[in-house]
Image (tube, rainbow, N blue to C red; front, side, top):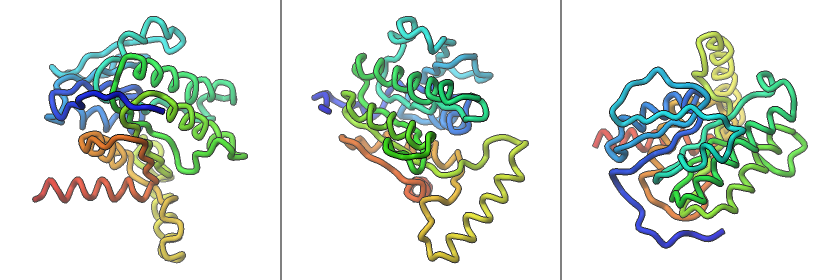
Length: 237
């Protein structure tokens, strides 16, 4: 991997977000639109969002048509939150297509177009050598992205995401209680597996993008929580 010798912008930036209709992306786009550091927010997705803002530009794209959307992936910071589940994908091939092929193609387009920073939502346990299919795909994506020519890459590895949808609230509450209970019993040994709010992940992503740290950075779930808490504390000063 090598880095561009460019002047990285502090403000007046353009953010590209892919996956704004997802659990993290839904919170993320609100933070991006509210941030004074971004004058333009471009959303790329399969459908138009029900959001109105002078900052927001939306493109409805087909992820299978790389040549048609690649020129649109231009700006300063890429927020890549695209992903599905095995339940929705219904096959390993379909899951791989979304979580690996589509995600990597977007990242490649951004890299080729000279974007500076990539903020990627991955997953706890991501490992290209994992025997677990989901974790292996996430790890393979991380490995491929690390080879691209971004000035800065930030990889976020949250555990169970809370706040996904109304119908999942009961399950989320149970997951939160169990996670906290196990962490207390084991003295924090399972802290990286504790559930984390999707909004917390979004907040941490935007915060790290403003710190302008070059290189590759990986944040496990418990660090994502700390990053978000740090950002809240700074806002109160």
